[in-house]
Image (cartoon, rainbow, N blue to C red; front, side):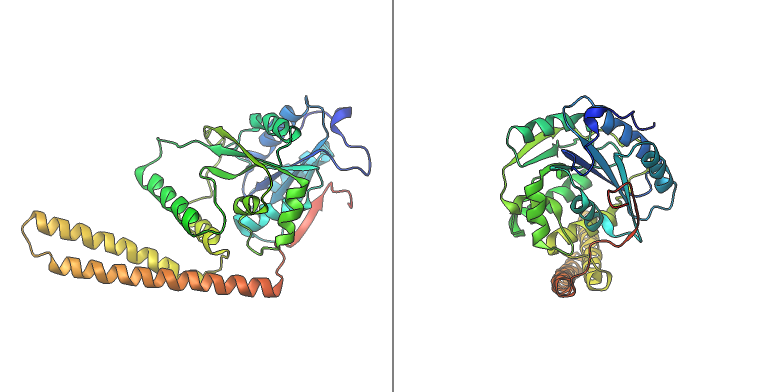
Length: 325
């Protein structure tokens, strides 16, 4: 799918910022990049506003960058930032939001799990006075029990141990007024957990519930360990390898504890001694808690280090169609 033809109302006058900037992070999204661009243009074209679309590529290994470059060549409203390497799910999207020049910024995924059809409703809420409008995915009963349990635990941890509440089902898909972006930028977080930072600003926030649509194409990049990494970054505000290693040992210890408890149940069912199994389970649980605590301690040490260094969110390899080009 190619970008829609330009219309007079959708192109901002030279030197002026657009009304809306749509930020779309990408990593190996060659199957979706052109389609999501066309879909966004299709829903924004009929509205009385100007807009641009900013793709930020997190060092894709497929044809994603090539496809987006062709979109930029055919439509000046489409812009591209290419990172020098993969900077993760937090830093890259946030950096692109900071580069956006719109009076309001919309953040969404490239794989259609954030439906473009909701954008007009978000813009209408913004025009009515909302500073932040977040899409909230409704609970999916089709998910496995383990995934539902994992999400419930992560939201419980965020609700009880985070400085600011995290809205269950809110992934960051939404619209943010320019004042909100400026406030978040001033926080200068090296590992920005964006959805929590939105709440931290204290600006007026509204939500729009929606059922999660299926992924349009390709495979999700969020495996179990990717989601674990994201969750730990959200909880501790950092994400680095060595200091996070104890957390992985803690997760392994928790799994071993579960295995020991299952062994105890089987031993009880077959009238075998269970004391050894229970002792092993207690030891494994203590080790798991110890390593988890050490890992979170390391996370906080890392965030102190990053704040001292003033590490940039992203280093760019190139950018296309921005006003300074």
